[in-house]
Image (tube, rainbow, N blue to C red; front, side):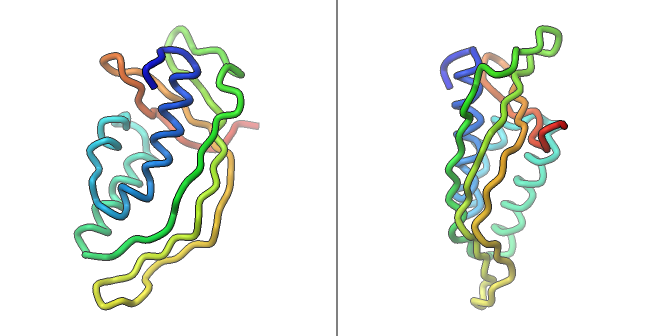
Length: 136
């Protein structure tokens, strides 16, 4: 993440996504907030979900994420915007959320997918600008 090239962008993107279960389980959103661009809708949705879980005193378990960017240098960094596009593949373990009475209110099976992540920089640090579908 200390690098200012595609490898650094890839490391930051992987780190960001792998924080998911920690953020959801603890409600500690500080790193995610610092790494999220204000216009990143997926980032905002994740942050809102973490806050809701915390406010309701729900318990989040599972969801461990293994994220990889196999080819960080596949795309050229956009000179005009400074954005570094990456194709990030992840596997996420099953998730369970139970309420304070112990009733399961949400669950998902194991999931794997590839997403386009666009990374930018703010004050010399990598931030997530978008997470979305890979364009056709």
